[in-house]
Image (cartoon, rainbow, N blue to C red; front, side, top):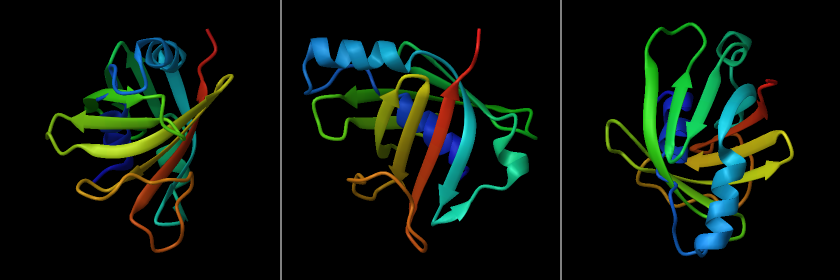
Length: 144
């Protein structure tokens, strides 16, 4: 599965969940906007530069749209979050309906996300070890 599609799916599932409305509302607000992919790992291996540069993820409400560099087709997903978990959880459902479980962290203009393959358990830490079935991405908020 394409990494960005997994990300879109992961972010898109994130309305409100068990973390409570206030915690989730604040986290959802922090996720909103346009994010540029800076780095990605799948199974511990870095994404090729041509897949990183120019790839963009836009989060609006509980929807994610990903424009992957070198592809004309946009990937879309919905998401839910539970910011009360440590680290905060995100479940993304892409248009193919195969939910992806992940975690996220917003730190100023930086966003980190790590996702499991569909059907696998949610990761508990950020990163993607060699040989693992996780995808980890780092994004930076686009300048307005």
